[in-house]
Amino acid sequence: MSADDMVVVQDLKKHFTGIEALDGVSLTVKKGQVIVILGPSGSGKSTLLRCVNQLEEKTSGDIWIDGEKLTHKSKQIDKIRSEIGMVFQHFNLYPHLTVLENITLAQRIVKKVSKEKAIENAMSQLTRVGIPEKASRYPTQLSGGQQQRVAIARALAMNPKLMLFDEPTSALDPEMIKEVLEVMLDLAKAGITMIVVTHEMGFAKAAADEVVFMDKGQIVEKASPAVFFTNPTHERTKLFLSQILNH
Amino acid sequence: MAQLTNANAKPPRRNSLENREYLKAKLRAAPWWLYAIIAIAIFTFVNILTNIPFQKAFLFIKAGLSVTITTTLIAFVFALLIGLLTGLGRISDNTFFKNLSTLYVELIRGIPMLVLIFFIAFVGIPGVVNGLKALGVWLVEIGVTDIGGWLSAIKNEVPMNTRAVIALSTTYGAFLAEIFRAGIQSIGRGQMEAARSQGMSYWQAMRYIILPQAIRNVLPALGNDFISMLKDSSLVSVLAVRDITQIAKLYAGRTFQYQESYITLAVLYLTMTILLSFLLKYIEKRIQKNER
Image (cartoon, each protein chain N blue to C red):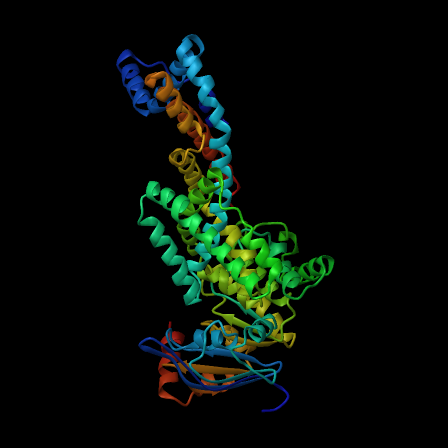
């Protein structure tokens, strides 16, 4: 393990009752890298992501974040989570709070940032995702694409070392996918370390440093997007690609 | 614009058959239960104002209103606290608290309220008081004199009003716990996950994210239970607490005016509950309006 590794996953296993969601996954993400995880549903992509910030408790194996090994101590879990931004498929904005409050709350109560600083930071993140004028709205008053951009701003406001995206565009209407992907592309260009679970091949081609293909809880293939999409080695990958690209 | 003028225009005249149908429909839709209750209330109040025995009964019984209202209010506040804690316990990952809260809820729900009130007032509270005193004496013996002395000096006689409040809040705590539990469980798992993913602790997520949404969802149910509690507070009359039921009973027994006493009593409860349910409906509408 070297100092420029952001995430190291070693022989990670996760068993749900009756299912082996992750069956010995090892993966290294370097600082500044954008990793896109592809795979059919049920292949364990989301579970892997959720194990990284411990929303899912691993069965065995080890994970290091920025050199720190994950344990079960709740203090450490909370601290590490506050340094990892997570964007969910269904946005999970807090519906009883305004957009601004959604972005400032965790800064205030987790990182103990002053109110003025938190608001200032929130506004600059909202500007970054292109909707500063929505600050005083409530989440349900926004479109899906806008809600997801707020969710990204909320995660960014914690100044994370690492961003996790769990199918961020899967719940969106087709015409809103682009606005979210554009924000994500900007982040990738800005050098933020990202792990992205998605079905958007265009994003993988444009932004990924590495594409990881998973099936049945295992990593089948790992390659640069150029190699992955034009010259995959494994039969399973070829089948998957032919199924999605031929539509 | 044409539509606008149309909407403002008077409805076209109906012929008599249409008119009859229209009136029938109106009549079917009318909340006649409400008119019936208002009629009963007016009838009784007119009676109270004009009929001397009713007047006397009312003036006597109304002295118990403050006891009924304060008992209900105080007991409800405690029931809210107990209910919230127990509700959180029911969904806790900690198996001890989960079992403890489930035990409490199941015990209370399985025993009639009247029996519980007797039990808590005459078995539970004296038992706890004696236990605390024994603990105090033992503490003094082993040398912890300050806390021990204070505990052993607890008076045996807990006032009946206090026992009534404890009995009511213990009983209703279990009911409210189920309401809080359902409310918390009605909030999607994603909310807790989002909060935790930002580094909030379980309790921070509960306090800032889950509970504000959950409580808003269960406000109507809590209001309903408040109304039920107001009615069930009449049960504490068995402890000789001087609420309106107890006083009506006393008055009836003394004057043999059963009709006057119990009609007045019933209408007093009815007036309070109807007013409260109107208030509740109003609050519900406000919440729906603010729902975003």
